[in-house]
Image 1: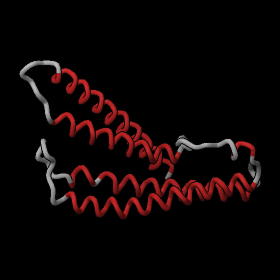
Image 2 (image 1 turned 180 degrees about the vertical axis):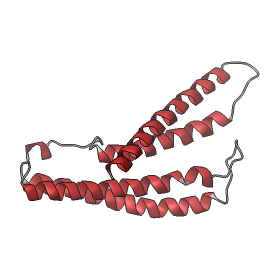
Image 3 (image 1 turned 180 degrees about the horizontal axis):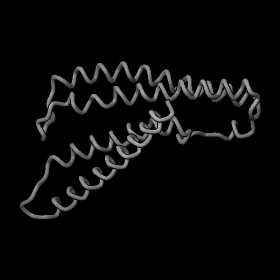
Image 4 (image 1 turned 45 degrees about the vertical axis):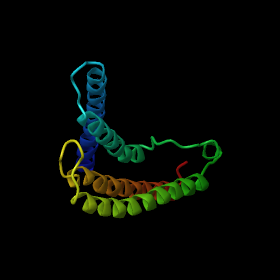
Length: 159
C-alpha cells in the first residue's frame, strides 16, 4: 500500500508541476502574440484556463494528504489532546463531504461535457472534464485516511 501511495504522490507532484508549467507557457504565448502584429493565438485563453484548473485539482489531494491547505489555526494551535484530534477529524469529515458531493457533481459535469466541444480547439470536453471526477474521489480517500490516522493517534494518546 505504501508503494502505491508513494507512486500516486510522485505522479500528482509531477502532474501539478507540469500543468503549472503549461499555464506559464500558454500565458507567455498569449503575451507574445498580443503584441506581435498579424499573429493571434485564440486557443491560449482556453488552454490557460484548463491547465490552471488542472494545477489546482492535481495539487488539492496532495494538500489534503500533507495538511498543507489554508487554515486559520489560531484556535487549534492552543488545543491539546483529544479535543485537537476531534477538531481535525471534523475538518476531514467536512472536506470529505465536499469531496463526495464534488465527485457526484463532477460525474454529472463529465457526462454533460461528453456532448460538447471546446470553442477554439474543437476537442470533446469530456476529455477535460474527466479529471475532476478522479480528483474529488482521491481527495475523499485522502480525507478518510486522515480520519483513520487521527483516530489511531487519539487512541494512542498522542498530542
